[in-house]
Length: 225
Image 1 (tube, one colour):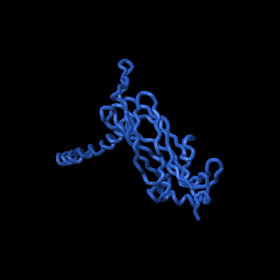
Image 2 (image 1 turned 30 degrees about the horizontal axis):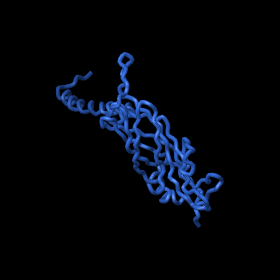
Image 3 (image 1 turned 180 degrees about the horizontal axis):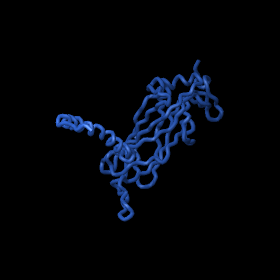
Image 4 (image 1 turned 90 degrees about the vertical axis):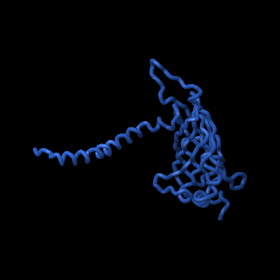
């Protein structure tokens, strides 16, 4: 076996130092990503989404695990636009809950207050340009404090104005369906001001669906040509 000369050893040392550092970086990054769901924000507690369901504005008490969002609903003979609602059930937990010998229970400092949410829509086929393929994303105010027990809150998932602009407005005059995933990110803080966030997703199908009570659907509902 050929022995390395001093010159070769020197070159190998210069080459090997930064290369070893570069090779180590993906491992560090991978390790940081493993706990991403439990490391939301800087707070000592985090949010758990137990369930997310939604209801059409035309039938606001009929919640389901997917949403059929009717872009126009005939009410007493008049085309009407409703916003659609979602309902989320949340709990919180501590990032460091302690062990069996030294258990840790949440205090009021660990309670999480959500004050805002963000909704964006995207499609599985990759065609997700806002205003062309899917409705525009939006932010909404949302105030809910999550303590140790499960807490439920409701919020707007599809806004009125989304049904009055592209691409949803065109669905009132045809039989097409736009299938999307709605991703909701909840933003908040614990009672010491440290930030917390979490997200959830639900399927939302947009179309001119048949109306409640047999009102029908299609072009006639839209009142258009």
